[in-house]
Image (cartoon, rainbow, N blue to C red; front, top):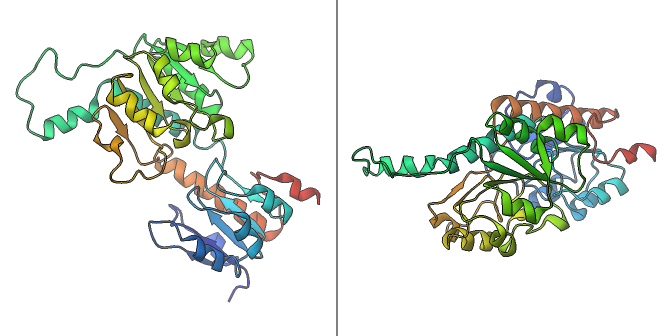
Length: 325
């Protein structure tokens, strides 16, 4: 039996032959994440851990085991105590860059679905309410020629801008740092402070990371600034939008609609008032869920895991300073 052991916290959409040739592999078989107490037991006997955003890899867990590498199948890693891993000289891998287009595509799908009330129309039809063509049935706003506000202008935000150009939209963006004039010109975008962007935009789409200064970035005050006809899209992190404020804004007509792929918490409890709203689309965090993208993410995560197990540098490492010790 192979001496090296790894634990993978969920089934992956790829085969694991190469990894199995190097290590004894255990895959958590359930749909729900393994409980923290299970992870605490596993890290005492494994050399490598492949985890997801839904797994809390905290200091207690990191210091309880003998891990050589942590490989996360995600572009984010705020669920991992990076400082604790670095202190133990454990490289942490992640999967950046690969999900940009898939997430941008899905963002655009949500924007179009919310604008043209696709989910409402489907429910209306399935309920047997469609009787004839009606001039005022399920009206929504035009997308072509509208003003789009992009909050956060990294890879995904820029990919959204490229898509919006095809719809002849006026494109506003806000970010921690303003882009170079050449990039603004090539993408056809204008830099606006957040407050002015919210006031001007017909659609607002969020693409900021999870951080202290983005927690509940969109709350009551921001909804007050938005147009009553505006639609909010969130495919970034659930914590960026205050869920209570979102409910009030939608229920009281402060904004026309919203479509989200992320929530606070995830998943929403079955009694969440957000689930009662017809003008809200909620997807189960599937922004990167194209077959090609998820397969590529899994492949990158496995490659990082193997590199850590064999003593090589991870191709995509959150804390490369571990190699300086």
